[in-house]
Image (cartoon, rainbow, N blue to C red; front, side, top):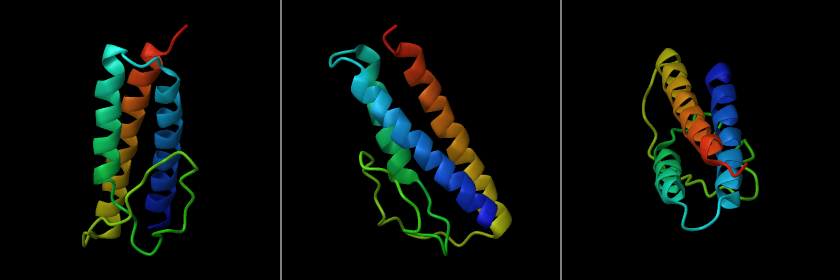
Length: 102
């Protein structure tokens, strides 16, 4: 579960960075709204690692919802889930970086 938690923390850091990057993109950019929606959806679906809830720092600009229902997953399944969330947020961040003003 420790490894799953470490992946969760990394995902949350990337999400915070991604939100800050999106905030730098001018309003009205056609892709900005889509990426904001994807980031919100990602955040709304994140799964906390049992035993580690609220033991991590999301940064000042991230609106993370701690009211998620807990799933009963084995440690191996939790690791898989956290890897998927990490892959997903990295994909979102890559898309954000591709539209950053040069």
